[in-house]
Length: 202
Image (tube, rainbow, N blue to C red; front, side):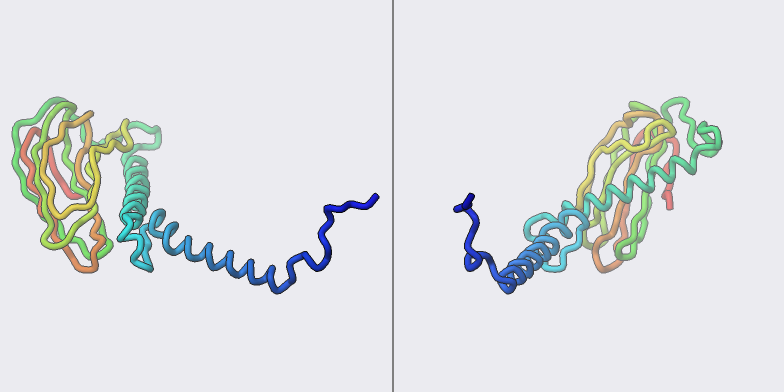
């Protein structure tokens, strides 16, 4: 039986055309990787397009949150004894504390990060303000405890921030900062409210 749908040999693409198409596809994939995937997923922006489109910031937030999740998991594991019970050095909050006021400063080299945590009882409130000496810093205001691994309040990239937050549970609540600039920055934090202690976690 004759099949009229079989293309003539002359109609088939030549080896040169196939190689050319493959090369074009590889180049297109590389362009997409460099201009879209790297900025959006990893915060790496070799072309500068990611910064213009906002994809770089998206990637930076993803990377920072992934690092924060790993740090919180490690801190949680380190704070538990072999039976999975609360270790003696973790804070045990019995009641709301008296009003406290503190000021702390931390200096971060490029691509370095740190945390300042406040030990608070559920329902207590802290007023805060922080600012950098120069440039913006990525921040993540969150809480954790022996029972809660990670609770987000807010996050972003700013040079200064102020506000009030209420502890959602007994535990540690505070800020993670990362310096994504190419120069050292100093972050100064002021707090006022009901809490037991405040300390830099690094």
